[in-house]
Length: 176
Image (cartoon, rainbow, N blue to C red):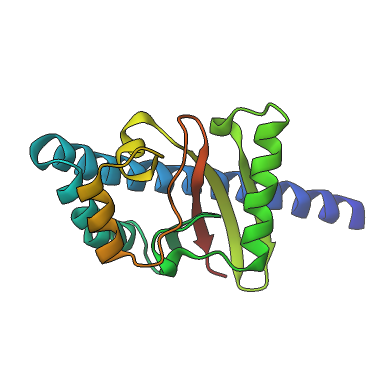
């Protein structure tokens, strides 16, 4: 009977874990789609300087829209722009592992990590640097764009990325 209970609890745990991963991926997709749409539209209509200002206010607001009492979504990176997105030591190690996995040939789109910690269950997914990102995060940033970034983010570290680099990660936390 104990064996049956053990296997039953493992099966239920596995099913709950799979549901968590699916829900986390859906949360990331919704957040990233909304953020990308706002940034791309702003870039097309008003240019990168306006997009920086929109990103400064819209990204946290969009993250808040896709968060609730159970799920919280945020972004982090090894090289942050917004100091509120600075990783703690644990997350920094996950991000360093992501870089190693990329160096080992793993496609960025597949780089994910999930773990249970004392304060909740976490799902982290790497973000690929795309062409549109380079206007504000690349190595050849227009002087006016650099000036705006410096005004909004005086301690910016999020530059010198190349197409296909890991820009950072989406972090989804499910509270216990």
